[in-house]
Amino acid sequence: MTQPIIIQWSISSFFGWGVYGLNLALHWAGDPAIEPVCVSPIDAGQIDIDPLRQRAILPFLIRSLQFQAQISRHTNGTATANAPLLLALGNGFCGSPAVHNVVLEGQPTIGVVFFEEALDAEAVRRGKQLSLIITGSTWNERVLRAYGFERVQTILQGIDPTHFHPAPKLGVMRDRFLIFSGGKAELRKGQDIVMAAFKIFAKRHPEATLVTAWHSPWPHLARSLDQTGLAAPVVFDKDGKLDVAAWAGANDIAPEQVIDLGNVPNVSMPPILREMDAAVFTNRSEGGTNLVAMECMACGTPVILSRNTGHLDLIKDDNCYPLDDQRAVENRWNSVGDVACWGESQVEEVVERFEQIFADREAARKRGLRAARMMQAMTWAETARQMKDAVLTATKDAVREAA
Image 1 (tube, rainbow, N blue to C red):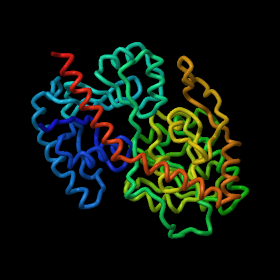
Image 2 (image 1 turned 135 degrees about the vertical axis):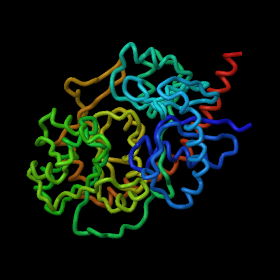
Image 3 (image 1 turned 30 degrees about the vertical axis):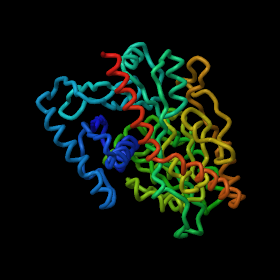
Image 4 (image 1 turned 90 degrees about the vertical axis):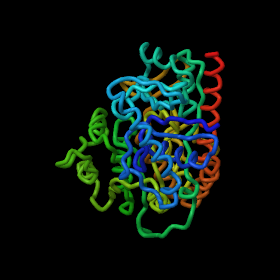
C-alpha cells in the first residue's frame, strides 16, 4: 500500500528550506512506496528546474494542489490528516500553518528542525509532544539531548551531484582572485566579519574580488549586522533591499572589487562556484550543516569554515580551511550543558586563511577536491532515503503505540 507523506513547508529553487523540499519531492517522485504532498503555498515562479525534472514532479504538484483544495474547508481552523506530516520548525520550535491558515496534525507529526537559539520551557514542551524530531546537524541533536529530548534523529542535508561537482573552469575572470560568500545577510551568518576581513585583504591584493549571494526574502534581517561595529552600517536601496555595492563602498572597498550576484536559482550556481578561488563562511551558528557551504565544497572550491555548531559535520581531515579561534558571542547563546553554541570568528584569522589560499593555489585545489570527494556521499538521494525510512518507522511506531 502506498504511504502518503505530507510536507509542510514551501518548495523553491531560491532558499534553503525550499531547496530541501524540492529535492525531497524530486527523489520521492518515482518511489512506488510513498506519495508525497505539500501543504504549504506553491509558487510556480519559485521552481526553476529543467523540463525533465518538471515532468517528474508534476504528479506531486497536482496531488498537492488537490489536497490543499480539500483542506480549504478548514480555513483558519484545525484538521487531522490520516498520514505522517513533516512539520518545518525553527527557533522556538514554532512552525507555520498550512495553506489556508490551517493548523494541521499528522498521524504522526514529525518535526524537522534547524534552530540556533536557546529553547524556553514552552518550546521544550512543544517539541516533546512530537512523535519524532529530525535535526539537520549532530550539533542540534546534541543540544536537544542536553534539554532532555529522547526521540531525536539527525539527517543531514544533501547536494545534487549532477549539478554540484568539480568540472573545468571557464576562466571568465582569470585575472581576478574570486572569493565567494553566500547566505542570507544577518548577524548569524557573519557577513560583517567577511566584509571587515575582505577590506584588509583587498588593500593588499587589488585583484581580489568579493562575490556575494546575500539576498533573501527577509532583507530586514541584515540590520542585525550593525550590532558588532566590525563593519560600516549596512546600506539598503530605495526598495528596502540590501545594497551590497554601496555597503562595500561604505567600508572603503573599491567598486570593481565587489560583485553582487543578486537572486540566483540553485541550479544556476554550480558554474559560478567553480570559477571561485575560495569561499568563506564565518557563520556564528548553523542549525544545519550550511547547504551553501556544502555546495561549494561539492564543486571543489576551497572553503573557509568557522569551526562551530553545524559546520562541525563538514570539517574533516584537511578538506577545508577551518577558523579555529572561536570566542563567545556577546549577548548570545554560547552553551547548553557541555555543548558549545554560537562562536565568533576572528577577522585576523579570516585574513590569514585568504592569504594561505592566495599563496598556494595548488594546495588549496587539492583540499577542495578532498571536500568534493566527501560531498559525493552526502547527496539529496541519501537524505531522501534516510528521511523516508525515518518517516515509515515513526509511522509504524505510532500505530503500534495507539493499538
